[in-house]
Structures are given as C-alpha cells and as structure tokens.
Picture (cartoon, rainbow, N blue to C red):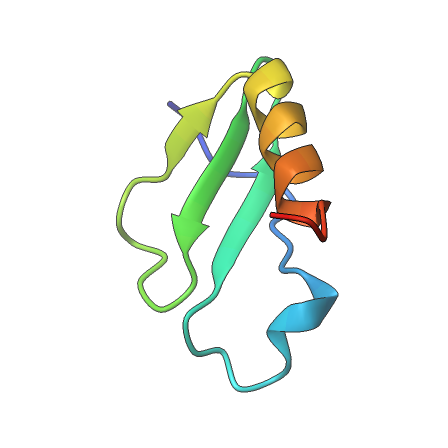
Length: 63
C-alpha cells in the first residue's frame, strides 16, 4: 500500500505533546491509521464505512 503523498492528520484533542496519538489519512479506497510515535511502521487500513461507524461511536458521549 502506497502512503506517499497522503495528508496525515491528528485529532485536535491530541494536543502538541505527540504522546499516545494516532494519525489518520484518507486514501482513495481506505482510511489509514498509524502510530504518531513511529510513522515508519506500516499503517493499518479500514473501509470508509468502518471508519465512519468508529468515529460515530467514539463521539457518542454515552459510551
């Protein structure tokens, strides 16, 4: 999977310390997630639908 040229971003809740963060990039066919502390490790990919479901659950304040 080619990750060059992707725009990686972190949540605004991550702060500036860089600890315990993940970075996300939206690819053509998948959402890619990687560890911000070691960006040389390969990211894992999830479908856009799975990412959407995850973010809905993560944002749900009742969980």
